[in-house]
Length: 263
Image 1 (spheres, one colour):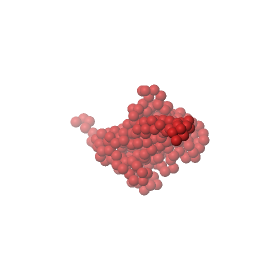
Image 2 (cartoon, helix red, strand yellow; image 1 turned 90 degrees about the vertical axis):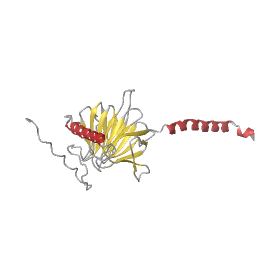
Image 3 (cartoon, rainbow, N blue to C red; image 1 turned 120 degrees about the vertical axis):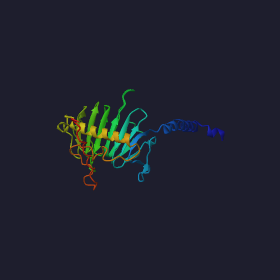
């Protein structure tokens, strides 16, 4: 009996099982998570894919979970490597959907995210996907807005370099430099002429994201007044926002205070 249990085949099987236990336990313990560092409004996850669970500052979002933000909402998530990303109102974003494929950071289903990649410790390649596009990160700071249910995607770069590919139509895969943007349409291949090099879109998005951060600081964990930089409030020309969904338009900004020049 003892002889049969110690045959070479049995010994190999036991050793392989032991090795699997040793290596898989640390991997499960190191499952990546994004920590919610700041928020305003309603921020949730879909733990079972159906019912939402509210998040609060300090909570961790594990890989393969969907982040959902409500109207007039904002969230900032910190990653273990020092990178972080911001999610603006009326958005749905899957964190590390293809885990354990570490290169895939986010899948933006709808809405607006801004990504800040930390390269201080060396190369840090990541990719972000949408229903129509793959954005390969070669740089540091960039925005992605999925504007409608058809997956129309606007990509804008603040710093560094990103490469954009249309998932739904073969064609050029341009690199965007700081200040440049491109809009990806379903079934329409990318061409160089589509790239906006004037920086106008970037300035509009930057103004919206700055507004959202101010609201998050003034109303931590609360619901701010007015839009805070979601796809319907970016002021980006051509953005669809809630068109076709029956959503109400965001309220107009308050009137400017009277001038005190000369008093």
